[in-house]
Length: 194
Image 1: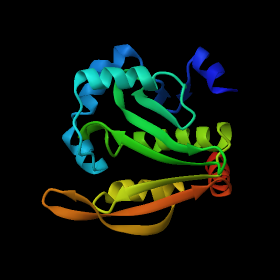
Image 2: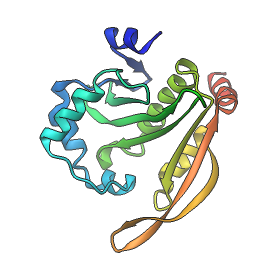
Image 3: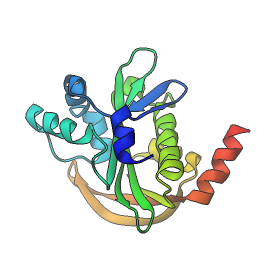
Image 4: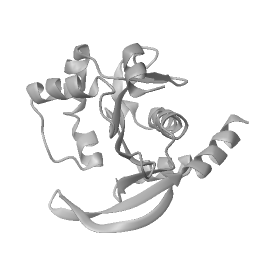
């Protein structure tokens, strides 16, 4: 299915307790609140703040599958339709069949419940099975052991360390680089479904 075909019907990926979908204009208030979450900002190393106008323009851009190099999906709790965060495949390189993945979960009360793991798994399935990617990589700050544990549980392999890549709260922090290849994902995905 092409991006235009998916966009015309809307892209939604369903998990056990969550679903992922494209952003809509009606998500502005919730998405703005998500981007103000101080713990999420720190865990992801974000250093830019956004105005409501910038966020509205961004939602307009990512609310369609009109980009060849990224897919931005919001994460919602099925039971309440509450916005939990976002998961993004970006830097999509169709020639080398690779992409980067990133995720952010809003609010301490939503972390540690498996929602991020479910969202990552849905987006990995989309990346490897639908977009036919061969490699998906990510960067995670060394001060985020919970995320590192989730990524390793999903099957990501550590590749290296970027030293002192982020300056935050008066000190420098390292970033761990990790990746997963399509055969590793498919082997893990099959074992999870058994």
